[in-house]
Image 1 (spheres, rainbow, N blue to C red):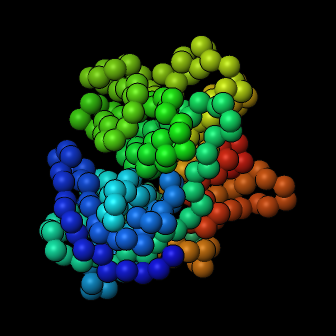
Image 2 (spheres, protein in one colour):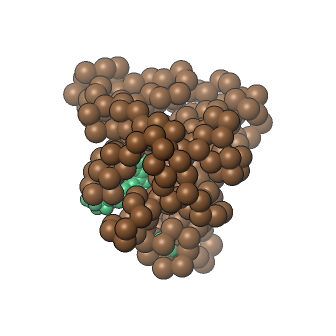
Image 3 (spheres, rainbow, N blue to C red):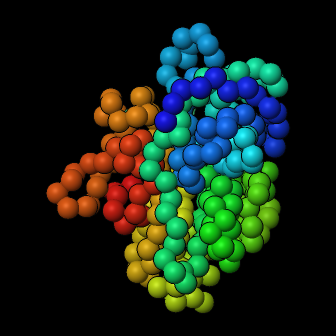
Length: 255
Ligand SMILES: Cc1cc2nc3c(=O)[nH]c(=O)nc-3n(C[C@H](O)[C@H](O)[C@H](O)COP(=O)(O)OP(=O)(O)OC[C@H]3O[C@@H](n4cnc5c(N)ncnc54)[C@H](O)[C@@H]3O)c2cc1C
Ligand code: FES
């Protein structure tokens, strides 16, 4: 991991509030693994003080892409960047997704902007010769469904504007009726209520998987102890989302 000043290659507006920011970094593009994140200082002044964490969504040659939603001051500042601007980026950070066991089908499950780490996961699986990926993507409405570089996508919307009418977990649960538990590995990211429902559905079926968690982070590198998640692993009571995660075994954490 290191701090670099990265030039903005392009800022694409995907929806009224969601953007894809392309940054040039030979180092991060060459070392990033799916599920890892970068910690961005959104402008050179000390406001906002803290860096903001973002999954790396994809990489191509010497360029990485961040997909973000404008939710507050930091992401608002990022949405105004232009080609040629430089951004202070720390990364790659965190524990990545790992590849599925031999013969296991990777099933990617994302809610809203939880899709962010899925394109690079899809790309990395393909690099390992694994192309039978199945993706489940849910959102409140079709306007927030971002299927950027995703493959074989089944959609779910709360308002019935596209795909299955209901939650992405309900859609996945119905699909799992048709496959053997030991034959799939689930990879998930999304809001905590969705992840809790997913964890419970998978536990009932004895299906395993990996989950990428989000939380507000201060340091992003394991120093401040400000990002604990309760663990059910051995006698370890807490793990740090930034350092031990953000990717965990889905049955090892209390979400
Ligand atoms: C490992 C990791 C990867 C992430 N990847 C992405 C990504 O790829 N794309 C993306 O859009 N966002 C991602 N996030 C969330 C992103 O970091 C926050 O949306 C961002 O920091 C908000 O900054 P802000 O200054 O715009 O908002 P703030 O003004 O800081 O906050 C605005 C609102 O968003 C809430 N918020 C802030 N940070 C988080 C957070 N981490 N999780 C949940 N709610 C938060 C605040 O409580 C507040 O209600 C990720 C977070 C983590 C921990
Ligand atoms: S954010 Fe500081 S320890 Fe995780």
